[in-house]
Image (cartoon, rainbow, N blue to C red; front, side, top):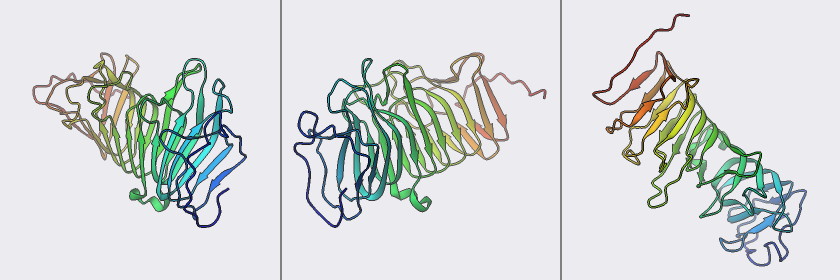
Length: 298
C-alpha cells in the first residue's frame, strides 16, 4: 500500500525473475502518490487479487505469476484519478498460457489496454466516469486484446460516458453516452478479425472504422435504441464491412437513433439474409444504393 504524499518512482527490480510476480490481496496506490511505477521496459509483474489506483503518476501493470509459464489472473482493477496514466498488459497470452484481467473499472484517468506488440486479455471493461463527467476518462484498447488460450474470448465493454478507442475484436459493446471509436489507421500493420458480435447503443456516438485487412469486418447483431452510429468518416473508408455475419443476424434502428453508412465508397453491405429493421430511426446510405424492402407482419 502506498500512503501519504510521495514522488518516489519504482521502476527497477519489479519484473519476473527479480522481485516481481508477487501475489497481493490488495495493491492500493493512494491519492497522495505522485510518482511512477514501472516503465515500458520494466513493468510491475503481479497477480494481485485487487488493484486500486488513485495516484497521479504513470503506472505499468502486467499480470503475471512468479514464473513466466503459468496462467494467472487479476480479478479486479480500479483506476480512479484523472491525472493517472495506466498501462495494463499480459505477461503471457497465447495458446498455451493466459495472464488476464477479469474486470477493469475506469472511473477516471487514461488507461491503455495492451501496448505495442503485447497481446492482452481483459474479460470485462467498465467505463463509468465519476459524476458522469465524460472528460475524466479516456481508454485506448490496442490490437489483439483478447484471450487466445482455450476457452478463448473477446472483450465485453460497458460504457456510460467518456472516450474509448479500440483496435481489437469485441464480444459486446454497450454504449450509453460518450464517444466510442472502433478502429484507427494502423498504417502498414492492419489487423484481421476486427469484428463485433453485439452492439447496443442507448446514446453517444459510435464511429465504425476498423482497419481490417481482410475487408470482412462485421457487426453480427446491433440494437440502436439511441445515439449516432457513424460509418461515414474518411478514415479507413476503403475497407469493406458488413452489417450481419449470417442469415440470423439482425440490425435494429429505433426512434431517436441514427445509422449512417454513407461513406462514399459503396462498400458497406448488409449480409445476405441478415435483416435491417427500422422502427422510426434515421438510416442514411450512399447514393445509387439499391434497397430491398419488406414489412413487419407482426
